[in-house]
Image 1 (cartoon, rainbow, N blue to C red):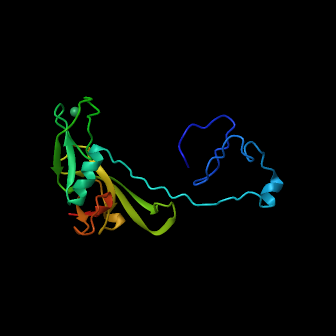
Image 2 (image 1 turned 180 degrees about the vertical axis):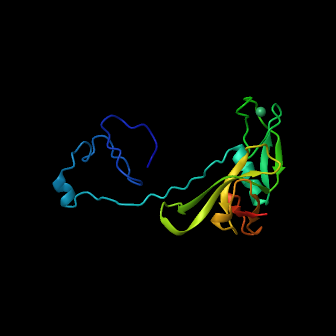
Image 3 (image 1 turned 45 degrees about the vertical axis):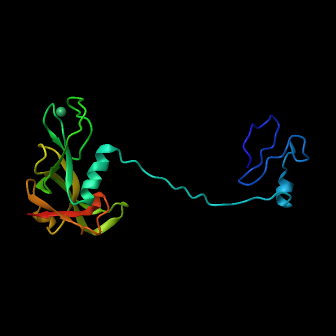
Length: 187
Ligand SMILES: [Zn+2]
């Protein structure tokens, strides 16, 4: 389709590749009747749109995901309150200070809280449960942790304060996602 200014009353056509009708052409301003469509006087086109897009992670989550791809857990440090935040962020919610100090924390930690779930991510009931936990990571400030799955442990054996360690995917399998860690297992 040509670019340019659409004049009042001009039929600009519908769909890709249809040239606009010039003003005063025999189709300009003619109403399309139901019978015209039924009798096939006008062509109709059906198509499926394919959208390609990218999602911007932002600075802090981007660094966090890059770290996971390298098999490390990245945090950020506030130079005002000295807390080490995981997952990292670029501002401190206590001081409103900007943060640009990046650190690695350990892939070990302790279970802060956990839940035994019989429902999967699609809200379908499962016969055997998954254990979802918030793991406070060693090297990060108190209360800083990530939510993940626990593995290699029976639900009845999990407790708050249990020491755990990340089980990583192999270097070739990692792709910069939270699932680069398969689960945390008892230490
Ligand atoms: Zn702070």
